[in-house]
Length: 477
Image (cartoon, rainbow, N blue to C red; front, side, top):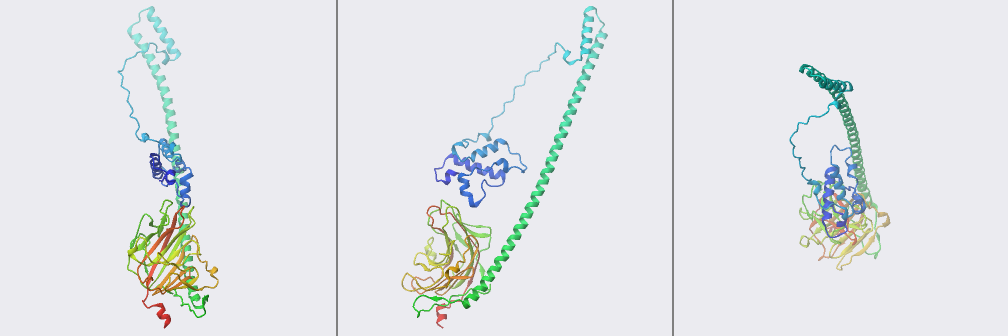
């Protein structure tokens, strides 16, 4: 319901209220908003004329007065000066009834207009006869009765013809209305059948996509197990340095619990101005007027995690004006630092360059980039020990589609996966700065200073707690 002027940041005026009122009436009358395409919503609100309400109302069984339609479309005019300035249309002036006048008995001087020529001639002859000689009262009465009967007959014939025409017209109108009703009923049946077919096709497509996603997930798990057995890291530091074997993804679903019910934000805490549930997924949205470079967190209110494996899926929608959306999944987050949480983070971006990196917000930032194995000791900068062969082939990120991710944290050893491929591996030996336990938090963030608009979704969030045995101790054994 924002007017174009409000989107441009201009001071609010009464014309903005009329725009919002018109947009509300439009949606109430037509059943759909003025602009419904999320991909072009902002540009449509700024520059596209509102679709005709008359066209939207075609096929809807409602009688909206033309003045109301004109008022609504005038409210939605892009030019604020062309919008209405009052609600006078909803308060019409009272109708003043005319004062009844006393009836007057008016006797026409001449009645010949109601008689046939023969009757008029008979009347003239009668009057002439009366002037010549005095007729008896019964003769005069008889003549007048003959004239009255003739006039009544003519009136009756005329009225019968008019009544017959009225009945014919009424029957024709009834037939027309019945035909229109039958046509609308037939069109409604066709529309319902079309919608049913579309729903069936949509459900079939969703089932097929779900089946393919399951196949991809299973294939990715199988590939990861095979890769864990066969893939070797290429050491780029001194030959004496060794890379700790990465943590592997669970082969079964045993021990996992869901952190999201798919319906609402139960067991999650965050600003509902930016976080909601849409299409069965946790949805984070930043609008063009949102604060730039500020981080918005949605924190799980369940127990703290120490050693764990978490699986989740995410996707971005690239909005106009912002091709640099950003987000992440924080873990072992400190609760006393909100809203600027300090934690390890699985970095999220639309491209593979930064995606899946191991970050630490507010302390050491980047600990291991995409396709890197690193170790963090006493200094604030991690030391890259190895890179995967063919790093460019690890571009597993799907820009605007669902991506399946895994985080495994065991002791001070952390491994990240995207779509079945390992993308980052870190051993944190910094005793003072490493995180040992904390909460899980979803992050919404934008680096674009001109337009921070961002759309990020999460689903299939599952957690499995692991034993507390240190991965480095196990490697030493």
